[in-house]
Structure formats: structure tokens, C-alpha cells
Length: 421
Image (cartoon, rainbow, N blue to C red; front, side):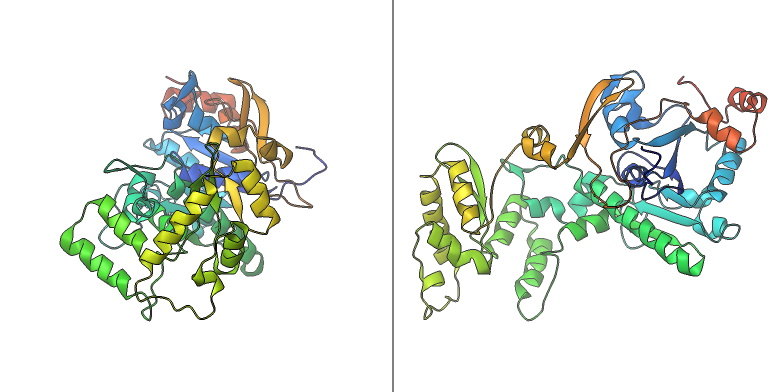
């Protein structure tokens, strides 16, 4: 980082107890802005170091989410290790954890314990399902939260009759984003009150938030949603049948994916404002768009299924890129479906600086998503370095006033570690 350019989170110290995705991603979002994020990992190594390993001790998922952080291996089961992390915590602005609910309290690192000595402390936690209710305190990761929150069924992603999990970890990454937003909000309020607070979210809640467009119930028009829930409980239908039945309730939607003549799939938008414009651009005449006297049938599903079939037939006579350009020129949302790999390597991603390339000291050239915000004044760009195991142990311990002799003794008795076993 250019020393003359301040990071948006410069001067912020964060202590991260992040596992796998959600917690580490919240820490990563702060590290991109120059926060001093100290990642506490087990003395046997963070689990993601050994997940999709590229070189020994450097796994794909660790490199992705440890960017810009300092790494300190500490044994949280050792009394001296716990004492060290408590000292670090009390000197920090923010604690991040996605350990199981109650873990911070057992370590004496919960908000109530820390705020008694440092009222400015902000403790941010992500749980799997929340802390109360039938699933409160349940163990879970992205897949469980997506399934339980309705997100898996909402995506209607099937292979034959079998529901498929999404490999994008939507609940994990959205929960991390929500927590980072909450921490930023708590930091803002702290300027006025002088006090921190406890900030919480869950993967389950993130799954619900991702479905905000449809995760609502208006009694005046949504009686079918209660009927659907009752039907699910009573009949226990196959998920594919349930997803299809649910989709049938949105029969007025004609926007979606359509195949073109040259094998592309295009997404055509069809909001009410763009509906007539879409049909005009495709040269399709339909009373639902063009006849002001037309009345919606009590059950409009057949009409709109037939309209979608007409759109499908027209689109199959078009080439994808030409159709996209024509639709955009007509003010109609349209895009071609692309693979993630094509997107990462695309000119569009490069020109807009949506991706960032750098040389990692252990694994060589890397291309990753850029930090997902731009500020006009302060620095916020993708951090590059990920800490080697134990790389910052002595540096951080020295900041606590320990000399090399004291650090060597901690290593010898198993409270901390400097090398992978």
C-alpha cells in the first residue's frame, strides 16, 4: 500500500477466530482496507491450509481468505495460550468469531467479559443457525444453512430428481459480508457513544436475506404461501415436485433463460415496465401487453406458459451476442450466461478491475476477485500476502512485551507454535 494513501480501515486492530469461510471473509473485507487483522490459528495449523493444498501448508481456501492478515498460532486449550489471546483481545478494537455459540464465553472472550475491561470492544459473531429456537446451537456450515433456510429449494437446482448443493457458498459469504457491515456500523456508533457492542448474525439468517425478494408474505395476496407450507408438512413431497409447484405460483414471469441459435443462453428481463418493450423487440403481439381491454384470467398459467413458448421459439432463431446487443439498445435487460472461469478471465472483469493478479511468495501467480468496493478518497484494494504458519508469532508476541526467551518457552510448553508439526 502507498504510505501516502490511508486505508479505509487503517488503525483498526482486529482479532480473528475465523473458521473456514464466513468469519475469515469478514476479516478479509476489513484487511483489504488496511485493518491489522491478527488471525489466531491452531498450533496444528488452520484447517484450510490442508484443504485443496497447493504446496505444503498452503491450501487454496486459506490463501483466498487470509489475505492481508497476520498469523499467530496459539493453543486455546492451554492456559497460557488463553491468557495471551485475552491480552490481545483487550488491546483490539474488534473480535471476529464464527466458532460455535458459547465458545467465546468459555474462553473468556465474550462481549460481556471483555467489555467489563474495555468498553470500546466490538465482538462480531456468526453462528450456523442462531442461538435460540429448535435449531439454536446446532452445528452447521453453508450447506446446512442453505438447506434449512429454503435457499436450496429456491434455486431449484436438480440433477435428475436429486437436489444439488451450490458450490458458491452463498450463505457463508453473505454472512461474512453482513457481519463486516455490522462491524462498520458499530464502529460508527462508537464514535458518538464511546462504547462498543455485540454484533451477531447467522448463516441461516444470511440465507433468508438472500431470498428477500420472495421471502415475504402479504396476507391479502399470499394465501398460497400458507397453503404451500401446510402441503409441504402434510404431504412431504419430493423436493423436485415441491420446487416445480412453487415455481408455478409465479406464472406471470416470462423473464428467464432462453437458448439461442448459436448455443448461448440469454437472460431476458421482463419487469412490468419492460414487458411490452420486450415483446415489441421480439416482434411478438400478445393481448397481455398490447390490448388495454384484456382481463387476466383467474388462472393465467396456461396463457403465460404459451407466451414463454413463443418467446423461446423467437430467441432460438437469434444469435446470442447480436440479440444481447439489440435488447440492450432497446432498453431491455439481457446478458449471456457465462462460466465463472470465463468471467474471471474476461476483458470486462479486467477493465473494471473486478479481478486482481499478483505473485504469491509460496505458490506463484494468482488471480482473485478484487476487493468488492471502490472509494474515491481512501484506499481499499485486494490485500495480497497471506501469512506463512507462525510468520508473525514473534512480532505479535513482542508487541505484548515478550522477548525471544519468553517466546521460546511458550513454544516449548505448547502454548504457541512457530512451525507446522
